[in-house]
Image (tube, rainbow, N blue to C red; front, side):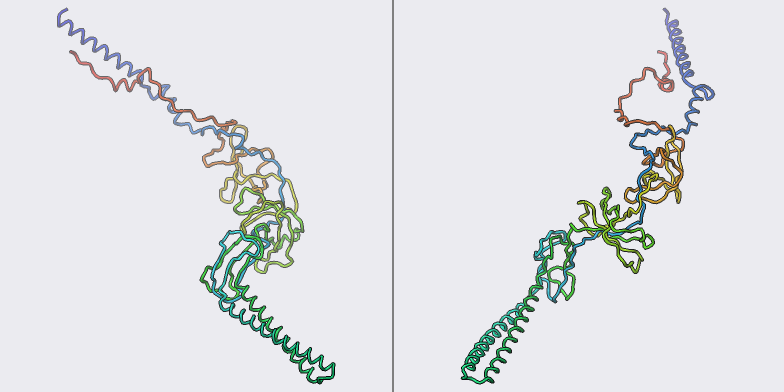
Length: 411
């Protein structure tokens, strides 16, 4: 084959290869009016939200529940046995032996005050008692001797009476000295502040070196086993209160526990500032908070009624209006609901309108939900699939093929 013929054949093969590649590129492109353009337009114009996967735990079915209707009671948890120990003398604080929260037994020494001056008074009183006792014994012997002599006619009646007067005066001085001694010892005892009962130290008010004035509060002791609910009820509802009524209430700091008690006492005088009536509630059962001063709120069970109840977590607030997300068949519907009173014990609201028994509600709705969104029910969400390596493509896209195309050159 001649060189000219070989060169012509090679140029023909190059042109044929170029024509085949350009044809493939033209087939891979889709026109806007074709089938591919229609599919892209449908994908872009679609605004339907994805289906919501819901498990049975996410759904609340409305039904009638027992609702305790009665006066609202608010107050705090306070111990029945508590003591505010104060200084009964003016002295300097020497030692404080207990800290807040420490348990104490009856008679334990809590605070010691300086008793230097009082010790001198005690010693002086004891010496006065000793001297008065000796004087009284001597006067008593003199009186008995003169009494015997007067009976034998060897002494006058006047001498016996004078001895009796001296004996009585000495006896009076002895009684007065013993009283001063008791007072001095009592003052000395007041320098030692001791626990009046078994309990815990709730508040330490002084430190060593402080000057304790007469009546100054030193330390507080309470019995954590004697807690009670000291609450207030509006005077408008006091006619509904009775001794022994059940009270359901929540205590701040114990959100998962529903406490129950009984009314033990109803005050006969309203508070002068709030015009509310004080009510004392004893805990029912052994479970009770061990911390005093916690806020508590509940309701007296004056009457018990049945009503539809909805959880607070299922409500969506929009200003003064409340909504819920109701599952209607296989789709979500946003429904407005009218609420009644709130059960503080259960944290539920009475449904006054907008829902009916048997309605299914989402327990914890979020802000991404849409009205009419499809719902798929499942028992459990499937575990996320592990990421897999992409499979190698068996065909190169038309764009990549076009970009990878390089012109062939003749040799």
